[in-house]
Length: 304
Image (cartoon, rainbow, N blue to C red; front, top):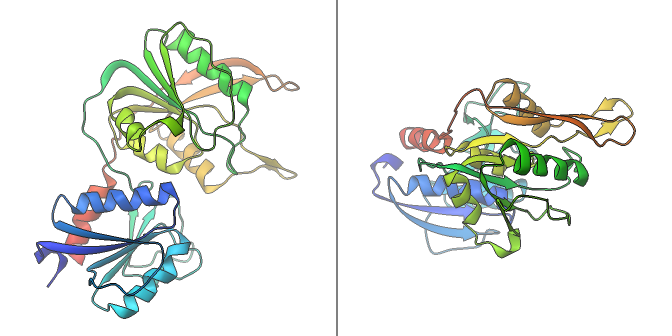
């Protein structure tokens, strides 16, 4: 019996403890639940279990060997890997859901479903006008994090560009200690450790505009899957002896800026001090409101 014909399905979800990876799995399962009765069993590694899976899903290289071991025991189950495997061949899985920033240079395998960015839950909730959200991350291998430069941008948004908006500002596990930005009473501050698990998702869905630091792919695409207008703070890429270092994440940010999907702050800097000399804002040129997980599940129900 095909997946489409079944009223109830069992999903084994292999997780590696990384929040961004787990959110992708949760988005996929949540979308399946709109079509089927779903029984979910979560694993960090494979062990004998008394259920029989219809789907075995995982995200992150650490989950792959456990997924494939489970497949050997349950031949009828379909393996769905999220993101491009870097150790094991993509063809070892039944379906691979691969964001467009992950490239195959020798031809894309036939079992690949390509998506715009990583999977995220989507929202059709209407936004509240004159409201804004800022999500402050931290240092990564993709970008520098210069506290003074970020502080300057935050205060410019609060006191100049969007002074008539009500703002909520939150941090992430990457965030360094920073001084509280000066503002005109139009901002509330939320430490990530003191917010509920769904707080950030709920806030992105209802704020008119969202500014975020660009290092987190999962947060970026979660925002792009709502009706909020998404902007990124200005960040510098790292440098090597050969010049500016671009990663697949920074290249993807550049692509989204260029095609108008993403707004951004642009700054000019003093050469020696690297402090901000001039600042401007480039607005998104189109409303993309992604629903990639819906597209993926609709296709999976047809092919599995």
